[in-house]
Length: 137
Image (cartoon, rainbow, N blue to C red; front, top):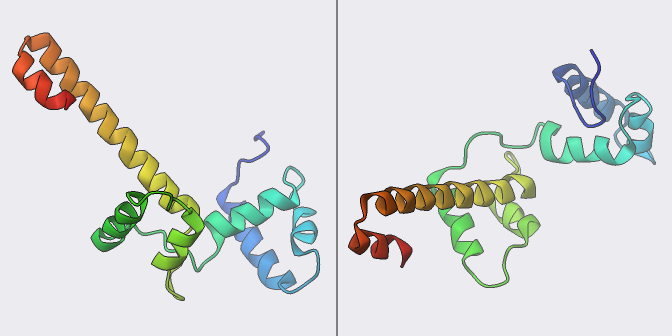
């Protein structure tokens, strides 16, 4: 099986966890680990660990309170520093990543835009201009 540069398998993730435990604290940790992954470089190994493989990451869906907190922070002007938002959501036992927070907001925005487009198209077809005005405002 051939794979692209950044495709990671479950076996690769397991190997990354073992190697991280083995070499943790070593200088040039990610360079050492990347030697075990011919198609990856030190940056991609580090990013895979930070955003996906680290056992401290909470992979469960966001709770209602977490969603509300993220949305309240995003609605404040100039506060889309995803790292800060993720740090504020995280606990020592369950860390949220900046990528999780950013993807949550972007996916939610895409869903909302898709729904608005669907409703707008539906009302355009029906010819009900009063309802269309409600959707567009």
